[in-house]
Amino acid sequence: MEYKRIGKTDLKVSSIGFGAAFRSGITEDSPKVIRKALSLGVNLIDIAEIYHRGRSEEVVGEAIRGRRDEVVIKTKVARDHLKYNDVLKAAEGSLKRLGVNVIDLYLVHHPNPKIPIEETMRAMEKLIDEGKVRYIGVSNFNASLVKKAQEALSRHEIVADEVKYNLVEREIEEELLPYCKKESISIIAYSPLARGMLTGKFDKESEIPEGHWRKRDPLFQEPNFSRALELVEILKKIAENHDKTPGQVALNWLASKPEVVPIFGASDISQVEENCGAVGWRMNDEELQMIETTYKKLNL
Image (cartoon, rainbow, N blue to C red; front, top):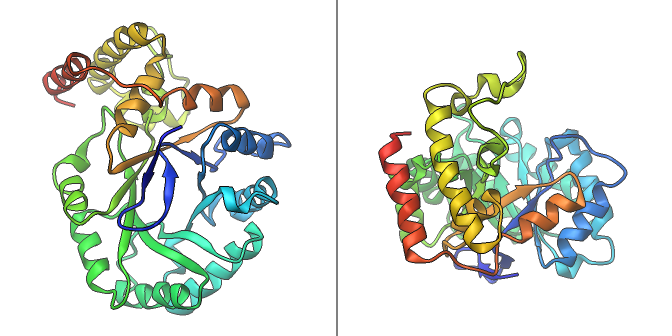
């Protein structure tokens, strides 16, 4: 496993993190899946109070019991809990469910224009001052909102922004990524495999069942779907060169960026093992150029 620092902090995290949203559902094996990630060197665990109504935090707490010093915990306060007292209460709830004394990285999950960011950030700073949170960040904030959140702080800094970022959805490269690089703010990349698109399990013959959530996803609708598949074919070629999978190539592309930490999800141990195989190797310049050339011509 490779490691990097979050922003200007002393948080040293694995170059890929484990996302404990458990979108396929929490099972009795879920704690084992987390522990497998830890055993392979993953130390960043991403959760949120809204995931399974707090149950995900409880599962993480169970999985890390007795191993707290091995883990960097990142959880998030919901957009409906951004008033001053609500933030403080939400943090207490997360601490209790996790069974820990401090949250390493506490993020505002989504911006809420109905609540002044200044009020939210006053509460976030209080949590740091009280020793209940080490560092603070945001999620789903564009560049202007990150700047506004930072300006609302008087004693501390925004150290991370968690946003959607992958090989086919790269909107953050226009403004947010350059801004965060300039300000030494880390990007935590969710949906690094584009909801499965970049794993190679889809092709032009794939049929998505009616009513499935992917039917509503623009990436899985034409012409985006066929265009994205062209890039997946390139990933397959690169994967063969390294005895890897397309998904591992896609994760490697993100993890190799110093300022980016992709978060992967997994419902079983085999998925954890595959995703952890995305690091510890590098694509060459020719392969990286193949990706860029293909992406630019697709007009995604």
